[in-house]
Each structure stands twice: as structure tokens, then as C-alpha cells.
Image 1 (cartoon, one colour):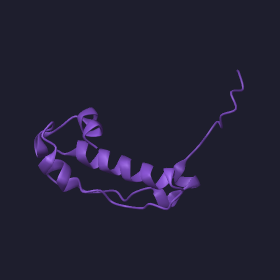
Image 2 (cartoon, one colour):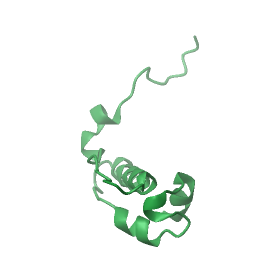
Image 3 (cartoon, one colour):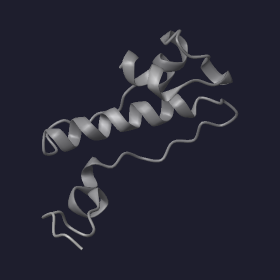
Length: 84
């Protein structure tokens, strides 16, 4: 096995737990694409700024305004990342 200098294990939950967002409940709405993407971007803002930016992004805005997806009927994560 080649030593590439990377750790064998790495967890943001251990390294920067303040940057891990809350688990959200989407209820009957099939908008996992919106929950996932807003959580991903909010976590990245926090991680990139070493905790200086801690924010929640609007899942509802994604469901209502991202017309490349289909609201509570479903959507595509790639379309959502492009939108963000």
C-alpha cells in the first residue's frame, strides 16, 4: 500500500462539529434534493470559513423557485447545485 499522505480516517463531525447542520424533516414532500443541497452548501460555507459563517439556507425557496426541479414531486441534485 502506498502512503499518499492522507489520513486513513477523517470526520467533519469530529473536526468541526459546529459546521454540521441539523437533520431536517421533509414530511410528505419529496424534496430531498432541496434538503440535501441547502444543507451541503451551508455546511461548506461553515467549513471553508473555519466556522465564521454558520447559516441555514431556505429549503422552501429551493422548492418554490428552482424551476429546473419539480418541487415536492422530486428533483435532481445536479440541477440544484447549478442553481445554487
